[in-house]
Amino acid sequence: MSQTSSAVSRSIALVATDLDGPVDVDELLELICLASIDAVSGADYAGITLADRHGKFETKAATHPLVHEVDRLQYEFNQGPCVDAVQGRWQPRSDDLRLDVRWPKYGPLAADLGIVSQMGIELFDEPGLIAGLNLYSSTAGAFDDDTVEAAMLFCIQATHTLGRVMTQRQLTDAMTTRTTIGRATGVVMERFQLSADRAFELLTRVSRMHDVTLEVLAGQILDEVTNRPTQPSERAR
Image 1 (tube, rainbow, N blue to C red):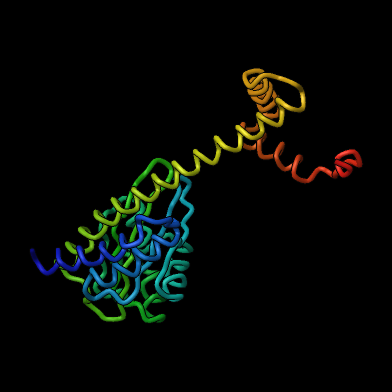
Image 2: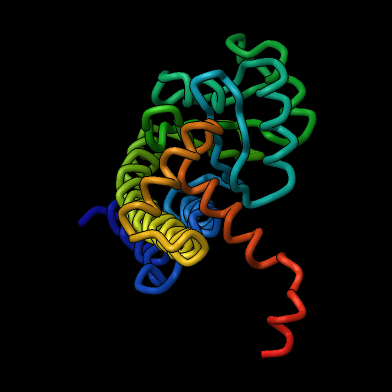
C-alpha cells in the first residue's frame, strides 16, 4: 500500500470510528474536514461547500474561521477553486493565487488573508445538491499531482462514509414521520369515533384541502393536543 493510500485509510478510519452510534451529518462533515488535512499533504485548512441547483452556496463545515472568510469572497465574486469544484470542474487547483489569472478578483484578496495555494474537489453530486471539499494552504505550490491523487481518493471514500450516514438519517426521519402520522391518526380516531382507515382517509382529505403534507398536518394536530387547555372535567379525574 502506498503512503498516499495509507494516509487516506487512516483518515477514513478516524471519520468512521463513531459510525456505529448516532452520528449527526453536520458533525460528520466537520470530521471529514479534519481528516482531510491528515490525508492530504500540504493542506493547512479545509472546508466543505454545499451548492443547490439555484447557485446558492453555503459553507457547512470548516476547520478554521479563515475558511469561512475566503469562502465568502468566492461566493461573492462567483469565482475561485471552491466555486469551480461544485460547478463541475472536478479538481481546480492553484499553486499561487497571487498570480493566478483565472480568479482575478478573488485570488489577490485570498492571498492578503494568507491563503496562497488552494484546491477544490467535488465530494458528491446528488439531485438538487452538490458538495465540494476545499483545501487551503498558506504556502505557494503546496499541492502537487500526488496531493490531487490523495484528495480524490479521500473524497471517494469520504463520500461512501457520508452516504451511509445520510441513508441512516433518512431512514430515521421516515420512521419519525410514520410515528407522527400514526399518533395523529389515533387522535382523530378517538375524537370522531372513526376506524383507523377512515381516520387516515380524513387526514388525507384535510391535507389536500389545505395543501399541506400529511406530516405537517399530523404535527399540527399533535401540537393542538399538547397545548390544549385542560378542561375542568379532565382535572377532576
